[in-house]
Image (tube, rainbow over all chains, first blue to last red; front, side, top):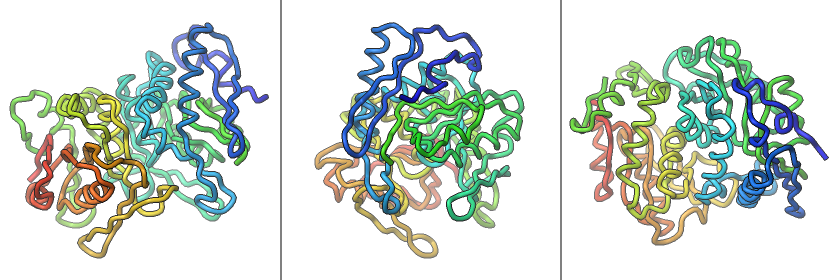
Length: 229
Length: 183
């Protein structure tokens, strides 16, 4: 069984102490064979866990897996079907908002393009600014860039220079973390402009691709882990 | 600074003044309407979304379709608040499942917008959202996709309109609602 630090340790890096009843389990979704759901029970009241379990089950069930996209052998986790279920989409946002509200987060940085879908509702609910982190040449103003490696070649992620300041407490959002290449570039970029990256949050993690290791000490929180990719 | 279109709502002025104009982007002579500065002001971002929610809540809209990528920022908060699903309309080869595509003309060349098959059902009432409407080419492609799937586009909603580029005319009978006009 995999235990994930972001789920079962104190979230002291999230400014105010979090009462134990705020922790809740994540769901492991085994794809493509069976959709067996296993709970990692952390601490927390039974009623909270049950509520979160039913929300997580619905979220997990709403994600569609598409084989051989973008290339053979890859099982693509398609969140567009989650977005077609208003209750599942609401639950997804609520789970993040419950974790981050009142934690002094001043910036939600969303990674283009699917991070733009989940980030803004969270930012609006917790009263933070939203900063789009974009592919090159999309942002019209002066930018700062961070390069990162792809399987073949490199790519870049950019933000506007005036978007984030020293002293900002940032939450990074994307739909999914795989190898962690894009996410770690996003974190480096925000840290270069002086922000403190409090946590990264994704709907889905592919633990076999070891993105968590790539992030090192930088905390990662996810709702769903998908295996068999 | 863009000019407010609805003088009455006091929130509009704050929204208009939060949008940054960047000259000569993407090329000389063009004044780019940059909404990222609006997103940096939580109150103004909240007001923007609230104005749309107030207009569309309770209007039997079952889906909000957002155009990649800045429509992804404004569409989902509206969808969540009105209990509608969110449909991303994307550039080619981004959506992993089976899609329908609509080609449209750019100043030089063509581009294409795609939607997953099954995202919308015949008869559904849909709202199309993007940050800005210029010539209306992209938004027309979005309307086409949805209508081809049998949906009814009840309105298009944008933060900014560039009326000089006549996008509204291009939309013909499909209503357009915007918060701010920029000459």
